[in-house]
Every structure is written in structure tokens, then in C-alpha cells.
Image (tube, rainbow, N blue to C red; front, side, top):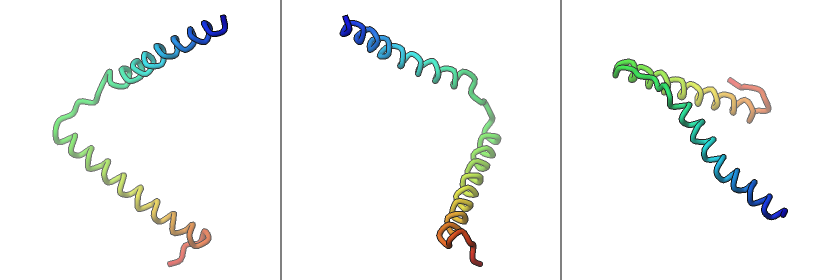
Amino acid sequence: MVVSGFFVVFLLLAIGAPVLLWLLIESETDDPDVMDRQRAEASARADSRTAAENRAEDRRESVGRVNGGRREP
């Protein structure tokens, strides 16, 4: 009896988890942003600028931690 209960739970999880994942992915891709080439290039440049600024900020913060929390000029 216990074995059949575990089997039912396992079967529900084996079928339910992929279906739930599929539904979540489907909802993310329902309404993708559509833009022309110029807007897409500007967006990509802005994303790369932001990523570069974040990396530079991370480097500055790590230097402060290495020197005991004090930044030296």
C-alpha cells in the first residue's frame, strides 16, 4: 500500500514538474519585445555599458575589502 502511494506521488511529480516548467517558460515568451535594428543596437550598447560599469564597481569594492575596508589613493 505504501509503495503504491509513493509510486503515485512520484508519477505526479514526474509529470507535473515538466508541465509546470513548460507553462512558466511559455508565459515568459508570450509577448517578446519587437524592435527595429537601431533600437536593438542601442539597447545592446546600453546593456554592455551597464555590464562594464558593474564590473568596474565590483573591482573598486574588492580593493576596499583587501585593504581592511579602507580605500587608499
